[in-house]
Image (cartoon, rainbow over the protein chains, first blue to last red):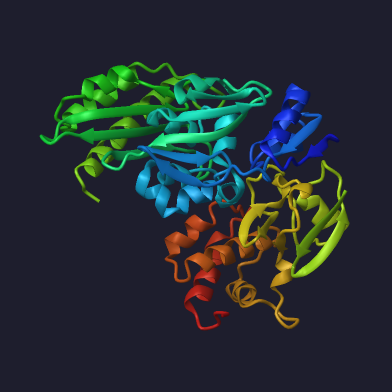
Length: 287
Length: 156
């Protein structure tokens, strides 16, 4: 690791002042599970690390149909908190798939989102949920929808002087949910992942459907055409299979050193069908 | 900068540079060599320590960020000068080959067993997903943890 300076602000105001003073020379340290590997391998070379772990950015509370999560919420809290599971069960399902147990001990929700790896679970889940992020700087706070926050590979709407402080997700009590992903080894970043949310009306037809994919582009992607093709329809297995094919055919995943785009596309279709099937079963109350 | 830590039950004060990881401080400053460095990116589990009871990769923790917290390494498992019963179970099962992964395996297993005292074999395997054994001695490691969890040499 190159030499660096370290600051541990105790208030949000102090943190904001440091970020606006140092701009791109500063890096925010939350759980450190993405930043410290980059420091160890000298891939990142910030002059200053701003440790935000002393800031009051933890905790979760529900208000008005939204679950508001502090940016320092750790993955293990998402995984284990009964309050979070009751209000948004997609979050523990996603958190269990993140990295290994040590990553989940320290890694934070805000850190994962700000890092914006296009194959990571939490960015995908936030895009599926249409979550809203609060970005705070010394000149105030603004709210950005998840779909506008992710701008490309490891790149987001965060300005250098801004901090992601709160993540609001809609309470999805009556909704069926599922995440499917395929990894080379347990704990790896996914080759392809998909998050599905399905709610049914009283006749058992699809009221709303959300599909978000990871690993098929430079950011997590929704496929609105496939979602539209489900709304109002009976969720028969034939229909779910057709919708999964439709979603697959609208994706153009990239190839890399490990996996071809063609294979990613194939996986996206298979995983999408499975995720929809499980989400529908949960919406019907099948455990 | 002077940093306070509690390592294996003992309060310590160490002079820490901002670019030092907990792993470096444990090994290079405090001479606690039972913590191993493997990959340096949090994947292999060789540098696992328990931070307030939870497993973390000590290679991914900046030492300055610790603020007086409590760390347990394998050395802290010693009971009255002897091995911890889980360490005994590892010896009995022949779960140690080169030994490089063993400290991480022991600490990960103990943190897991705190929450899941009577796990299935499958659950043990899943709990060890983040700890690599390059001798591939997984079967005996799982055997040892299973024997400890379900046996009568269980501690406390």
